[in-house]
Length: 143
Image (cartoon, rainbow, N blue to C red; front, side):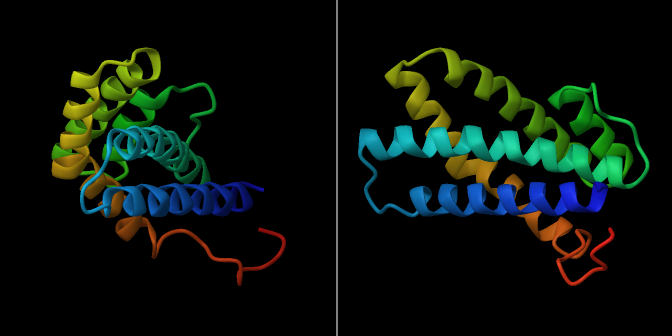
């Protein structure tokens, strides 16, 4: 069951990241496409930390009642994230809390700039790191 959940979380994360990468590839993004990119960022962050939680659980950890910040810190202990990455992930969680509850053009611009500069790179780094660690569908059906 845990590996099945892990594969499900992996699929959700990679789909969300793919959408975010497509939004970020816009040559001259409009306000609407920047707002859409920020929504995609929120979904990617949510699916990303849940993927980290599922991976931790698959390794025998107990994170069922942990929130995103605790899961990110646990990911450091498991070697899934470097200390510098943990700082960015914690920043992303704070930014996500702001974007989910307010709409301010200045915030949109600041978040979009952070997406370009740091956030998307961290998501890609997680995808690249976990790609070899997440079991694929060719594993035993009983996993």
